[in-house]
Image (cartoon, rainbow, N blue to C red; front, side, top):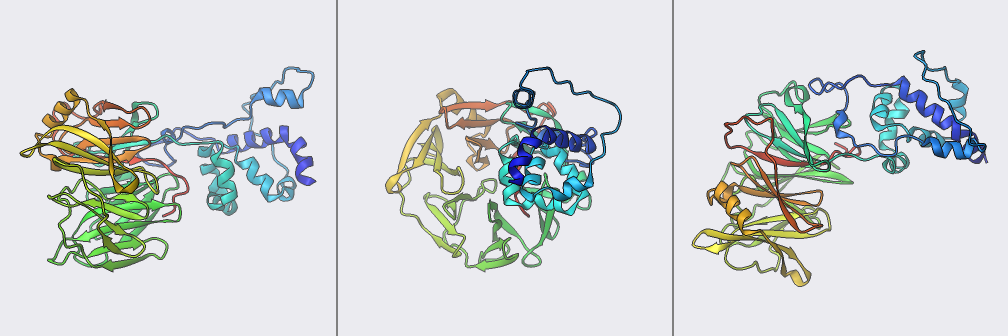
Length: 431
């Protein structure tokens, strides 16, 4: 009854409280270099305000104009007793109407407000009224210590860059971005890994499982229940597999895989149905590592014929597994095709790359296919080349191929070293 009565009273007070909180924790211009606040451009907010028309129809039946004065004076004081009497569910409901950037600033005022970031009920309320942009993140030696962002929703490069020196002041100059997954970024430091969530500005340093430690085929896999770091040691004849599980905060060591996996160090493992999928060297075949059991397996699937190179892409979780391959003979690809893993573990052809686009792709990599790597990004299958500044992507919903424009911040005379990542900010990705 208390909730119902406050609901009618709260139609106007909710706007007032939300407006009060917004003004009380108003933002100044966000300085990307200092990261003093969460980057404004990471947010693409929806439904952040209660529409005046809706309030007018409910609270003003005579349809008289409602005038909200904008006084330069400080906001009116709130009765502390009002907050103490609000039911928990109603308080969370009110706070969910705040723009997320304002709430992130407000959380430092109260331990309870900060704890709401991890409250399932608050998450469900706030997620219905806000969303984030998604980005393609570019790392390049000539953009030293900072990253460029391409907004895939707007189809444009954003006019801000994330500074590595500001993000990792104690590790500037020696940190290297290895992988991203569901809002988390993983860097390699001199003797440890660092996993960070940019939105919550939370991070965790994970020591190497041994010293010295050389590794390859690194992959970060983030799920709603935690994340895993996967890698294969490369410092000895016996290549062991190491997996870090964030749920237990412990390294596990497993036997290596006898067949030689792909020597393409730019291509990461593909997460599909609880396993990480890889492609072996010629003769090409598919191998997978089951994260739960720590066992290597060989799926019973036959790859298409006359493949000159093979890359795997997954849309994540239990979704779909794709194969991208160059088709040709004598080590030269004449075409590039896309397949999807269907029923019975058979590969079904989906689409072919248009001839002119295929010629451009093969020319920019000079038929050195080890420079090509692929990944999934919000409905796009991205095909990248370590030596070329543009990205070729396939829009799955429309079955069309496109080229991403070159980053305007790159110098006219650029060198190789283009590392692309999918970055989808996620507030509730815990480190």
